[in-house]
Length: 295
Image (cartoon, rainbow, N blue to C red; front, side, top):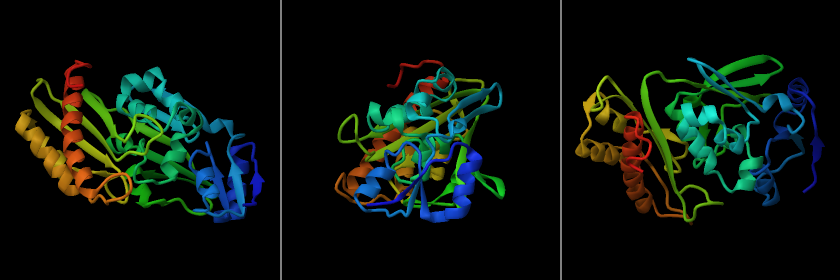
C-alpha cells in the first residue's frame, strides 16, 4: 500500500494537516495498531500523519488534589513506570503494564489505545472508573468530552475529521480508594484481552462500609462499559462475600459479549463473574491499606 507520509513538528502543524486532509489522513502515534491494520488492508489511507515530531503531546503532569493529565502521546511504559501514577492511579498503571509486550509498551500510546476504539482497549476500563475527560483539538478550538461519551462502537469515536486527541485528564479521587485492573488472555503477553475488568472501591470511615463502587469492563460489549447495576449492589453497603458475588453476577448480566476465535460468549460471561470477584477483593484490600491481601 502506498500513501503520503506527513510529519508535522508541532501540534498546530498537525491540526492544520487534519484541517486540510480530514479523514484522508490517518493519525500515527505509536503505530502498534494502525500499521498492522494498514498492512492487513483492514484500513486504507491516502496519507498517514506521524505525530512522532509533536513532542509536546508526550507528558505526564500531576497537580496535587486535582489529578493527572496525560498527553495523548504518553507511552504505556511511561505511564506504567510513573511513580505518581503507581501511587495515585494503580489500576491505570496496571492496565498500561499489560498492553501487548514490552516493545509495544515502549511505542504504543495511551491516546492511540483510546482512538483505536477497540472494545478490548486495556486503558479504557480504568479511565471509565475515574470519569476521565478527553481534550479534543482542532483549528476551530478545543472541546472536552467525557470518556463515557467518547466511544461510539468498534473503531468508532466522537472524533471529528479535523480533530486530534490532545490530552486525557484523570481526576484524583479523595478519601480511601482502592482499585485494580485484571486482564484475562490466553497468555501473559502479546495478547488481546478475552475479558478485562476494573473495579474501584471507596470506603467511608470504617473498613466495612462501601461508600462508592465502580465496575468497568472491556472486551465484553461493542465498547468498554461500566456495570452500573452491579455497582449499586455494593454501594452504601457493608461488605459481605455474598454481596460481592451478587455484584459480579449482575455485572455479567449487563455485558453483551460475542463468541470469536479467542473465546465463546459463555466463557466470557463466566470470566466476568470470576474477575469481578477477584478485582473487588483486591480493590477492597487496597482501600483498607493492605496492598497484598486479596491478590
